[in-house]
Image 1 (cartoon, rainbow, N blue to C red):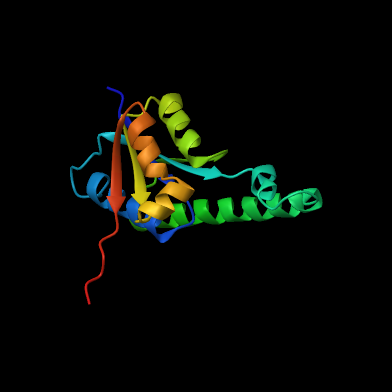
Image 2 (spheres, one colour; image 1 turned 45 degrees about the vertical axis):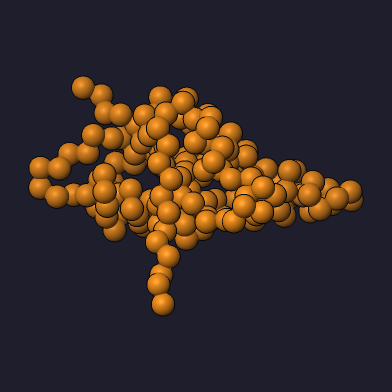
Amino acid sequence: MEKSVMIVGIDDSEHSYYALEWTLQHFFSPSPGNNSAFKLVIVHAKPSAATTVGLIGPGAGEVVPYVDMDLKKIAARVLEKAKEICSAKSVEDVILEVVEGDARNVLCEAVEKHHASVLVVGSHGYGALKRAVLGSVSDYCAHHAHCSVMIVKKPKIKN
């Protein structure tokens, strides 16, 4: 019997790393006799350099190669951190992917590509105004992904 696919979308934020750790702890813990029902796929959406530079304005074309190099370094760092988190939780059977594009579309397309039954994303905890301006990846995925979407929120620390 083939395992269901669980996709975890990550970026370079503590919220997405927390969502990955939480997911591993609750669905992939290496306790005796625990054989997870899921195959794990971790997806990082790397913005395109042209799109990123396009936000700066005209005449920014010469910086595209430098921006692209930085975005590739960030993607490599994100995957390395994801590997470390998986390794620390004794999860070795994992597929890691970097896909260029907007995170909303990349994650929904990954769900289709892998026939995933669950998509896990972290919540940045933006307020209504920031969400309206920046857009919420988790909100978009909850409405457009063709699978169950789990939004993992990092608990607030009470003083």
